[in-house]
Length: 494
Ligand SMILES: Cc1cc2nc3c(=O)[nH]c(=O)nc-3n(C[C@H](O)[C@H](O)[C@H](O)COP(=O)(O)OP(=O)(O)OC[C@H]3O[C@@H](n4cnc5c(N)ncnc54)[C@H](O)[C@@H]3O)c2cc1C
Image 1 (spheres, rainbow, N blue to C red):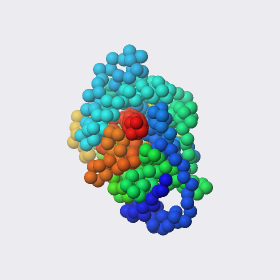
Image 2: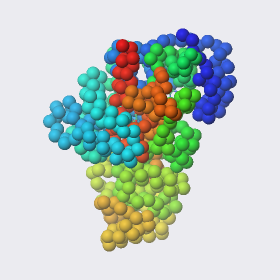
Image 3: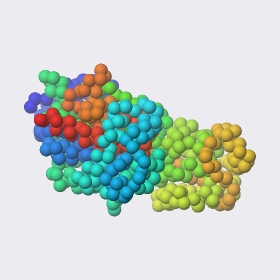
Image 4: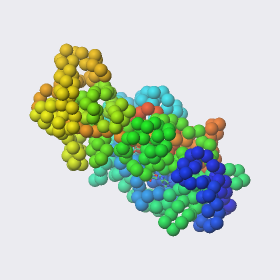
């Protein structure tokens, strides 16, 4: 099959960014000189995260021949860093446990729309809510994924959460192991150390028909009779894209997940002019960047001060907003949570302390507030003043009058020694923006028409998420869309 280099030649800012400011046409000229070997499959999947591998497994079940191209030596995206929560409202697993969740597809849809501030694409959101049960049942029955159900673990606490279980931690790593085992059983080829550097199109009609990859041996081309699926994740590890699209505070965040998700679904599809949406939106959470320790619940106790020993935000906010404010409102994206011994001993903080201890992250401790400030490198006089003001306001019911106010529903005093200071940063979890897709996973162009042969799934696609997400909805939606893409391609073959 003849392929066109036009897609490589079409210069755009983003395509130029993809080559690290090297001239896009120079790259193309070099490519003209050596004919890269070609291999043909039914579909070419770029990226080995949950979106990519679910698409591949479903395609193989549908009788298609997929290939997965992964730039690293193993699955290295956010999936293997994730907690492994997925969502369903009335799955076989829930039924087997006799759970009366009172949950419905409609409630799931409404929660997703609420959390996205009404900005999530309604058709995509409905697809995810409607197909979640079928998808989780399939992951359990066909793929062999094991879930723990029944716990009210993620908002809105409706027993919707399905936590992937097994020997490996975190759950996302175990999830990927189940999926890789199934892919192996189905003989799905996975080409590692194969970085997709360009898309290929048919010169006669412009359809996307393949991917050019850089391997250790040179360039190779993979052609997909039914098209190419971008499953390369978001751009949470691409500082330049974050600076340009999500802002400096986002770019200054250490990543909470993968360092290999660098925006290729936007960079490489640029020449086809997809409608790229929600690129200013991302999920973040607290982290001790240098070690990766996670103070998820600690940040919703006590008070937060900056290195300059000033309160900078309302500690009643969600952990997402606490992380966002720490990055945006402190000079250097560092905050210190100040708590006392009673708070320290709360059962819900056990995992957080373990995380700091096991990762050897510092937690400062002293018998006085002034002593604590000295340990942590804060101003002792200022910290004592802030803690005294906070305790007095708490006692007098005037926390709302502090600057900034504290609106915590269950505020805790800082009275009992010893006292603790926990350093943390706002950390980047995942970006939400990318080329807009329809319910078949087809990438839409700037005029809203499907770009033939071009698909996107998971964090590589845009449309579903805005502002925040219902915990578990990202892995779930990547699986739902992956199955939709494969089933759509199967229909094309018939
Ligand atoms: C700490 C943390 C906890 C989370 N917990 C949850 C949770 O419990 N539930 C939930 O729903 N979501 C969770 N998420 C979000 C979830 O992990 C992601 O939404 C999801 O894993 C994204 O999957 P993906 O298939 O889009 O991509 P990824 O898993 O990110 O995989 C993309 C893959 O593409 C590869 N790649 C990139 N560029 C190229 C290229 N040019 N060529 C070839 N390969 C390439 C990468 O190396 C990577 O292996 C969490 C995220 C983090 C960071």
